[in-house]
Image (tube, rainbow, N blue to C red; front, side, top):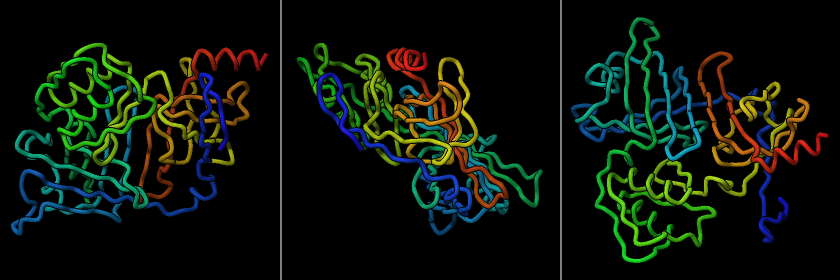
Length: 317
């Protein structure tokens, strides 16, 4: 951890290392899936919760810079026909109106995703390892939740406006580098909770990300998400070599929850001219359990700012 200067002011950057490859490669990882039926019960006893663990499974978690949340693609194998019926969509595999199923995903007992299921399709052609393929999103509730219009007289704190909209939906707003921002006039926002938050972010240049279970994070799109800066190298998580792609850098690491969009990372690699600081713009976590040689890694795309790119070109001659 070291002191830095930004705009003439001192700040603190927290540098942390991704788990070493040896630690991650030789560990048996676990995935747990907790399902909640908010529209009815799963059985005649009125139970509306199901927890599944110690089964063959895969999860792909996708995060992209913008104003949305995470998307999860889940595959569960070897479930019985009753369990398939419990968790699958009631019409064409789509979880539609009248049926609301939520899922939480735990990686090594740490919550990594919480969201609403969009589809859940059973595939019995692979018996005896029948599979259930689930798609879920972390911001469906925000998109579907109705909200009263937000109106206030005179310029308002952007933090107060966002906090009020989030609180009306039972969410907590978390801010970084937003303090001191005010609206340009008397704010008025209409639509669902998500539409109102999206409009605020669009008007004032903010990025937004729904994080499990009931938080929404906000930070300026052109700045860092927070002051945590993961360090990645061959000794600390990096798998193979990065690849330059569309003005950015694509790389793969052992899985780490420290890798999230909007956060800076420091990379050290033998690839010429690639070492340095980048901002994560896309993160995909590929996880699996009870699968030989299964995935437990993260695939990232990161970019330098124009200022960082010019500095790198100067340093590299």
